[in-house]
Image (tube, rainbow, N blue to C red; front, side, top):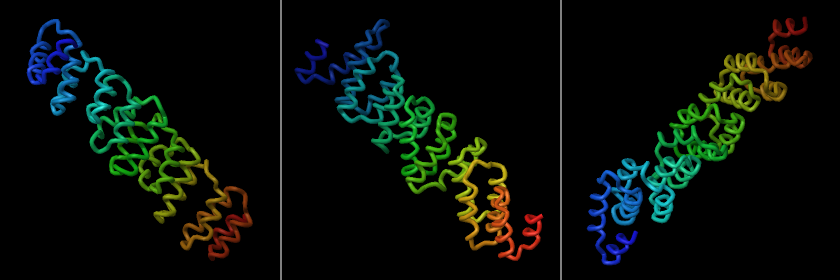
Length: 259
């Protein structure tokens, strides 16, 4: 530190960097040399810092360099340091707050898989919904086991981007969770796929069937009204099911329900 201060006080930064670069090549080079050289790169040669961090991450005083990178707003390098220090939540926060400079999809997925805070994950999902919708499904696959699927649906609803979750929702519907089933059924109605809706409601029963039936009985398409009658029938609302079938002239359906 004294040598560094001596050189810097005289404006001899280039000579100091050259001295430290030769010093780290020694067999028993002290960790302080690697850290001090990293600080100098950060302040005077930022283009060379990232390579230095990658080569010597294990020999650096990471917290000291984290403070310097925060001060100098070297966001990409800061993400690398947080990951090296197993501070994956902080790495995610930096990538979200300082994208696109700090964001990298592979790094984001790695941090999402290792993050300790659930809130960090959901902020990441919200960030992808807004900034990288094309990569959202890939992120959700990595983090699937650690996510509250109902909360993911809530985040997407707030963003008005529920359709972007389609592939993810179909993948996790096997858990038969009400928020997921409601979201899948809602998307199938919007897509006009009555047959898929019929299959969904038959295979996954944890949803508000009567609320869905009430919505579908007013649908303009006959096939959706048939699903409504089926839901009423499954929930023992016989008169509603018969009346709906008769109104559509579906006498065979009405007779079957009546029987």
